[in-house]
Length: 141
Image 1: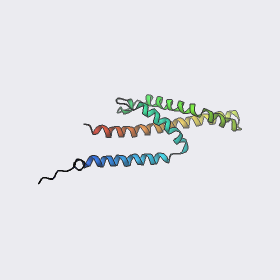
Image 2: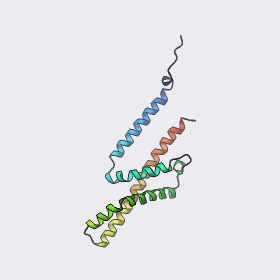
Image 3: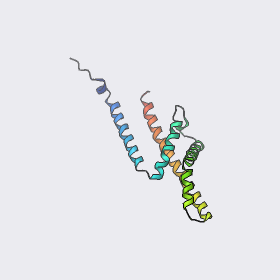
Image 4: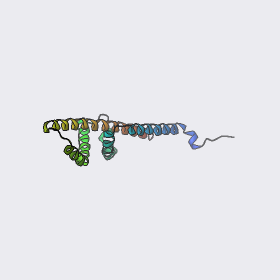
C-alpha cells in the first residue's frame, strides 16, 4: 500500500520558512517596542510613507535606490511630523526661558538630529520591507 503524504507534510520547507518569517517579524516588533520615545513618535510617519511607496516597481525595491529620492522621502516624513508637532514645539518654546541666540542654536541642532533619526528609521524600514519582498517573490518563481 502506497502512503501518500498530506499536502502540508510534502512541503515542510515552506512551513519552516513561514515559521522563521513569523519569528523574524516578532523580533522586529519587539525591537521596535524598545525604541526611545522620540523614535516611537517618528515611526508611524515612516511606516505611512513606506506604505505609500510599497508597490511593484517602486524605487525602494531597486537594487541601488537613489540617494536623492530617499532623502526626499525623509524630508516628506520630517515635514509631516513637524506639522503634527507644531503645537508641542510652540508650547515648549514658550516654557523655555532662554536667550534667543541659544534657542535658535538648540532648535537647529534638534532639527538636524531629528532629520538624521528620520533617515535612519526610514532606511531600516526599507531594508525590512525589501527583505520581506524578496522572500515573498522567491516563492513564485
